[in-house]
Length: 310
Image (cartoon, rainbow, N blue to C red; front, side, top):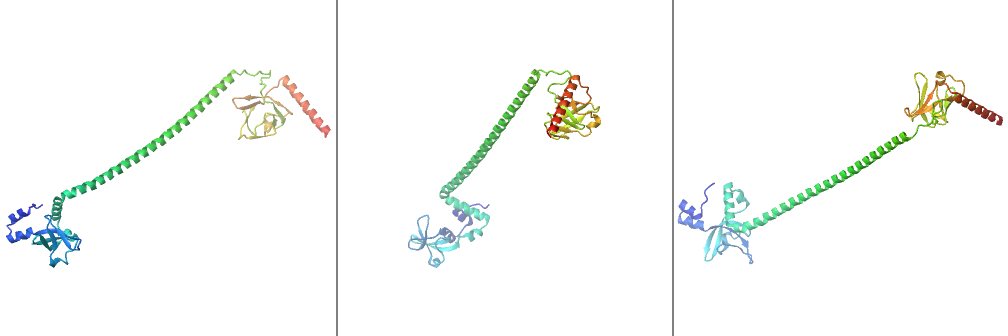
C-alpha cells in the first residue's frame, strides 16, 4: 500500500510550483443542494458559501458531488467542476484508491458515523439475541412437551403392568384355592363294582350306538385302546364324532365289541383324559346285572304300553 501523505507533505516532497500549490489548496470536494430561493449552492466547513461558476451553472445540479476548483470573490466561492463523483467514478477506482477514499471518509466523518453504526448494530445484536432467545424457548417448550408425553406413556405402562400383576396375583390365589378345595374335598364313596357315583351312565342301545344323558356336547373325541379294552370319550369342539339327542353313533363298534342286545357299559370320569373312560371288556357284578335286567323290563313295559296306545 502506498504511503499516505498530507497535502503539505505532498507539496514538500513533490516540489510543486507555487501556482500548482495554490490550485491544490483551492480544489475541494463539494456536494451541492438547492436553497429556499431555488439556487444551487453548498457551504464549506469554514462557513464560506459556494455557488456553481456561471460556466457550470447548467451542468452542476442539486444533489451532485463534484471535485471542484474554487474561485474566491470576497466571502463567496464559485466552483468549477473537475470531476463529478458518482457511481461511475467509484467503479473506475482501483482497490487501493477505494481503500484510501474509505479511510478518508471515515476519518473526516468518524464522529458522525460511529453513533449511527452503534445504533444500527446494537439493533441488529438485540434482534439476534431476541431470535436466539425465542429459539431457545421453542426448544425448551418442545423438550418439556416430549417429557410430558414420555411421562404419560410411563404412567400408562405402569398402570398396565399394575393391572397385569393384579390379574396374575388373582389367578394364583384362585388356583391355590382350587387346589386347596380339591385337596380338602373327600373322595366320593365307591360302589362294589369300583365306579364312583359320579360316573356317567352309558347305555348301548344298538350295535353301533351309545346313549347317555351325560352326552351333552355337540362333538366328542372317541378313542379305543390298542387292546380294545378301554374307550375314552371326551368332549371337544373339533371332535370326530357328532352327538345327537344324547347319542353317539360309533361305526365299527360291533366289530370290536359283539352286540348281545341293549345294556349298560361301565364308565367313569377321568380327570387325566378330561372325559369318560368306558370299559369294553368288563364282567359286571350281580348288582349291575340286576339293574340292567330291571332297566330292560322297564323299557319293554314302556314299549308295550306305547304299542297298546297306538
